[in-house]
Amino acid sequence: MKILFDSHALFWFLYGDRRFSKRARAVIEADETISVASAVSVWEFANKFRLGKWPEANHIANFFLETMAEQGMEVLPISAPHAQRAGLIEGAHRDPFDRMLAAQSQIEQMPLVTADPAFKAFGIRTIW
Image (tube, rainbow, N blue to C red; front, side, top):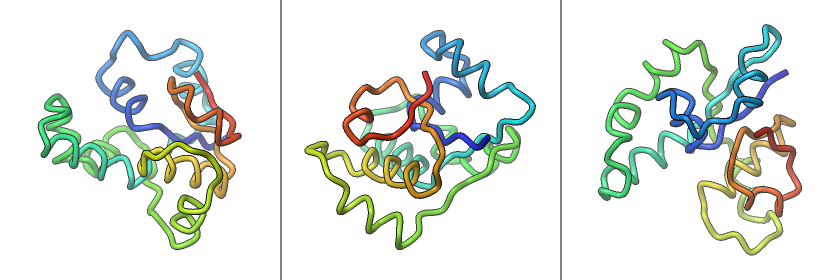
């Protein structure tokens, strides 16, 4: 099974944050699981780091591809169908990073690893 990470969940997982769910960790550590990080996450890390909103994201903002390779994670690029779905997806949630992750989760049929309850409004499967 392939799973897609929300940006905060990815950060918490990589840095061993205690807020990361034990259930999500068990799914990730299963032999059949393939972990995937979206290109939108590096955009979010870099953007929020640059603006001073997420200073702890310095390393991952600057070394995203290297970090994903070290972790054995796939990186999902943003495609035109992803962008179209993100723009058209129903719901009042305005965060463009979240909208893209929801669209990618839907199109790629991957559950999203997230603690954010806002994703339930998009009707996608989540793991937490």
